[in-house]
Length: 305
Image (cartoon, rainbow, N blue to C red; front, top):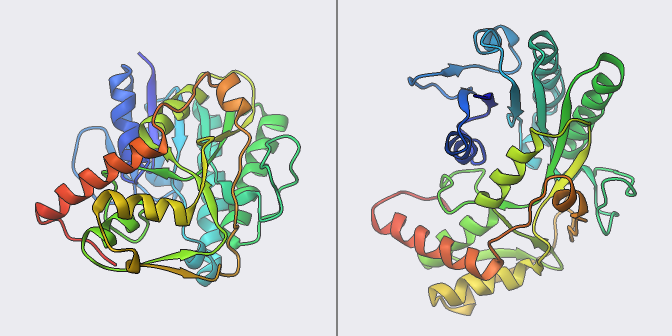
């Protein structure tokens, strides 16, 4: 049985990834900064590697590193903490992976590309992140690559594009998909940045791709996303129509500084190396999200604007 350690197991990607790994027959260890009491769960901060020692003493075969400071705004406001977590924290995990001979799946971000790459290609594009979050994750990628090249670390880097999940928390770090559905379902307005477009990857497809990355023998950087690129205005209107909300609730605003307008990834490595093709299209995803969000709100789950 393959033993996996998921660092960041309580996050929006971590929780469903853990469930998927269990369904594939993995023995799963979980680690997160969030306090909790359950079997094979370690309360830990990647900035303090001693917290992770008990988990690594179990000699995991593969480590999925999802923990990070993820907000563009927060990373700009708390720059020292962003670098400490997204670079020094990654280095701590890398050293522990080398110690236990574990394979590392490093969860980076599409933000590493910056605004000028179109399409966003893993081999041909020249990443030039325009915000501190993207920069810190790109430096993390280069650290992983260095350790692979110079110190025989076994690793792969994943660059995810717009993952969403109908069950993700109604909190600060929810996806735009969930934010739009929450607001429109309760008669609140949504703001859409002019000229922006994305592809949207359902968590079930993302979890399959992330798990497949653990089986690669050679280091690679791999985009994971959906090939169907839609304007965010179109997405908002699809959700509005599904929820039968008035069009007046959608407000277009100017794109803020340090935000990339169009994210258009090449996905050949996703299909060729990971042998995965997304199964849930945007129409299906919007329907799934809207039905679930309405049900959660009707059952009294709180949400924020």
